[in-house]
Length: 429
Image (cartoon, rainbow, N blue to C red):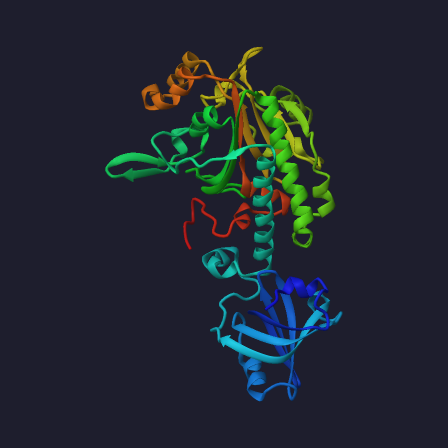
């Protein structure tokens, strides 16, 4: 049995092969049935000619509906009229399962397609995105492993949050209150003193009621932490892993990204270094563009769009005001009003891809920051032990993988970057 991509690559022309898949579309004209079959790698036309095949096989081809599963045996022929330029001229054809009438047709609403997501994932557009997703995940693993990082695995159920209580999903843990993880942040800071260079790719959960084109309540997080380094060093890794994922997508799925609206050549030009802008300078740029923005606030979609306008590569914004940042971010030694933190921001209304910082190592400062944010330092006592025993400079970041995929594939909505999206309005199917 062969896969369709092998046929479309032109390596099997003239050979007799067996193909299995699902009917993508079908039509019968005169004594010929043209059955377009899909598998995980693409679509291919199978031509079944009456009189050249068993009568029951031709009748089966006429009868079978979209999404019926089939087996075809025949000769691979180059034909410019066929999708992809090749077809399989059947010598035998068998319907393995006759599907019922498929509920998805043209011009369906987005809400309906989300209701039947378990079927919509079979569409060509979705499978193209999933193939790019596969390449991106592999590239992230490849980058960090090539850079000498160890993969580690934090828990999904946690006693405290790392990004603020307002966005925590609560869990009844045998009568005690627990939460779904927002980030591996606190556990990474414990593990970094053991493994020094660590990374992780796994799900995170944010109970944000944001109904935007770039927010999910469950998403995949690529996170890293490194000992003995500061903010500047991990920014280089953020730029490096994004560039590597873009390069691999351009090399490993060029046809897919092209169809989805992104040029492979564009992705190949996403190379380090990116443009760096301090937060205070970003406000000056915004003012020049006619956007008044209050110092201390986080950048919103409007501001991110203005800052990335006309830029082919993401930008890095650094040194955010301390008043709006997480408790664990280190204050800038040169100006305590700012933290040694950064975001990597992409264009096309995707926004923040990466958020990271150097971590605060001063125990009293950490305890004070927790108090200022209404947190009880006793609940974080195990985390504060990392500053009591073998305290060391360290830094890291978290990257939303779906946002990276959204940007690489130039998707209008982040929900298409993941098979089964979770948003404030939807947790099924």
